[in-house]
Figure 1 (cartoon, rainbow, N blue to C red):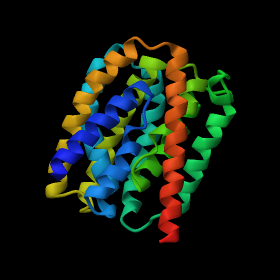
Figure 2 (spheres, helix red, strand yellow):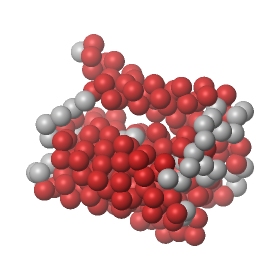
Figure 3 (cartoon, one colour):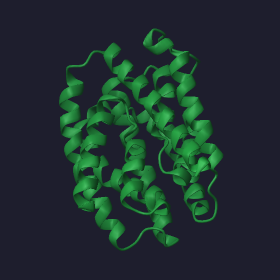
Length: 245
């Protein structure tokens, strides 16, 4: 039943994340946490994403912004390694609160879809952005929705946003998973669980692409903001419940 549950959650998360510019990993966090131990959430979510990403990359290959990928990956790889290395001994819970607040305030800054941009974004910024986001992602499991405001302010939307984020996430996951496995945080049955998530995610990509094809840019932007709002609320609620417990 755990395999079936993870498969269904992978399918649902990646279908929704395709039409909302990401956030699939964050949607998987509570689902994975329900099925396995909390300490296994970050490695398992990244593993499931890694297995499901090739399908999305193939489906959106021609839309990948390689200029962003080249700027993002070198710094992102360093951040991913450092975050995964620290994962075993450091759990910075307050980081999740900061991320949640950032996502919620970003929705307000965009005036719930009425404003096209909120701050200037340059190609060179993606390097340091990649380092910070990949570092945090390795520690807490999912931060993909945090990237959306930066892509939107750089003028990247719809297929380009989905494709470019998928390419970056796939290559960064190689570093993260290698480091997790090297430090003994990814082994045994977790590989089977990750495969179940990945297969479901791959199928979800197909459905998501069909839905995205007929969607206007304005509607896509609204879906992105909705996902940011939900992601921020989930992160904050999870952390508050943990503190209360």
